[in-house]
Image (cartoon, rainbow, N blue to C red; front, side):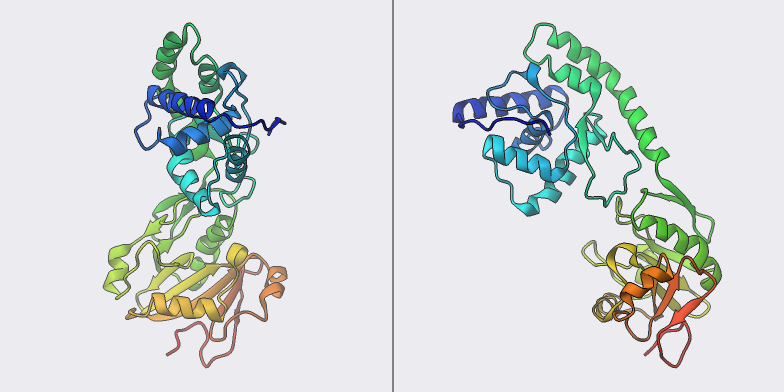
Length: 325
């Protein structure tokens, strides 16, 4: 963020600037939701444009969501609650990205989606247009920009897709996951664990930090007596072994920890209607990582480490890799 001096607030100037920002978003083709007050404020924050500055003075900063909120607090006295961050991200920034107005992580395009450094910046062509808002020739530049924008959107969409991780499920179906974070471990689970320990298994669910339901076979789960809504805290991978009637619930512990006693209760409750026996697996990147969690792992569960893919660690019980009543 650029250094700026916080000045005394002029309510009239602030309202005028907000009205201008909303009008600009409407001219860019955004609907009422994406040109509302929240979206106008987010645009102004990304431009670091104060109430008394001219549009030609707009900046092109890279800001995280928390920095956007802090800037608005400092320069517009707009104090969004901490729990508004997800609303800003999902209902304004994502739409700005999809429309090509904003680019994500220009400094590191393959940044993991759960990184605290995830940031946004006004797209160069859009920035050039915006800084001419209210100036002579703006209408002509707007028409040119709108004519060229579909090509820009397609270009950035291709760049985003190039950074995704392709993975093939046991049945041959191909999906891709967002880069980084625990998705690297999820790919290892599908490629290494499932191949060895759940051969011919049916993958009914795969989570993705960027798209919660990367794979969600809702009908197949319902046939097993499992009803899941979008609020249920699913494991990262769910595999059905039809010949054994096992439902294997795999937690990728690189980000959220293993199946401990609390998580075991949560999953047992979430899958309480299952007609298949439940098998609980904690998947970790390495045995070094396992050391951090040894005291937490629940009994009657299994642990798999990606750096030793041919071995399982079984935590007590009368069976090896099986459901428990």
